[in-house]
Amino acid sequence: MAQIYKIYMNQSALVIADFVPQSATNIQSIDHQYFDLEKLFKQTKENKIPITYFILIKKPTDFFDLIKKQIKLIKAA
Image 1 (cartoon, rainbow, N blue to C red):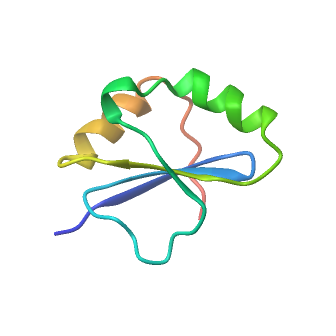
Image 2 (spheres, helix red, strand yellow):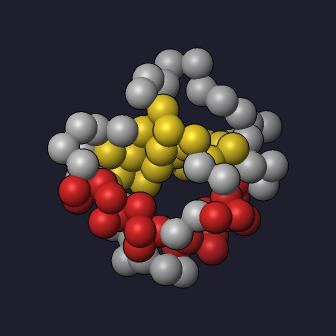
């Protein structure tokens, strides 16, 4: 079953999935091996244009669990 996770940072979003969403626009792909959450967050603060950052990975749940350990999670509706 397809998995997709979204983390919103200011006006931008980080999408982690095991497939490429058809509806996404203005996507910037990131290699999960070189991913740095702190650096990405700083970049979104400096960038005034909303961008969707995308990580394509076979096991998005495992990668999302790693990210959750680095951030304060706020559950939203």
